[in-house]
Length: 276
Image (cartoon, rainbow, N blue to C red):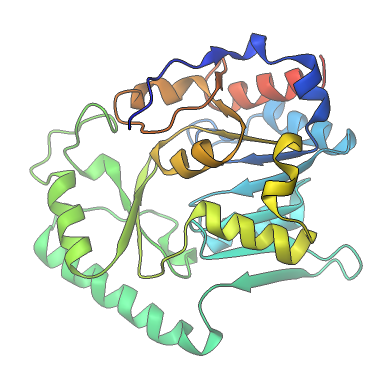
């Protein structure tokens, strides 16, 4: 059953609920970033959360190359990347990056070959397709730019190009891939992982807890269709204002929404948690 998109303004997020939050799980693209950039006020918000003792876990469709940098250099506890293909964290004792992949290392080379063959088949079928510029740093995920597709109004900004979203999705599904749609990409992979299941595994393996046991102490913030499972699972859920463009397509809506879009919306939510 589709929920009505009627989130409450973030100003109604109670102080008692905010004071209980110890873990923030967050999408990255157009939730923390703003049109691909990390703005100063948003990075300051990340630092303020860390200083306050709130653990931040990034859960993104972003590539391994980005996740490596984020896990090493940002004030985050862990990063779940490529839609759940792995998680990364910096070991606090050795300061070395640790990666837990959900594909066996022995299968990585074969997987990479399959991705390359898939790219060639896609371009042969749909010559106008564009792959993400960060595709070179992805391990298990093929990212197709939504801007190279003609897409419905309720999923992203339409482009007058002769290839439809439905055609490409149908092709990918026929090839046995699982697909997710973010604010900027179609993300396709052969694995059965997703943002939620991999975050649950990360919590058990890295943090020694079940997400269900910290549900009252956790919040999730996101901006797109591929955040639906997180909106459904978590009790305290927030959308940045740009999520409203998906209001007709979302099956599970967040409980609150910020007044600002993208990174400014994340900073707005951080201020609520920090009583600023």
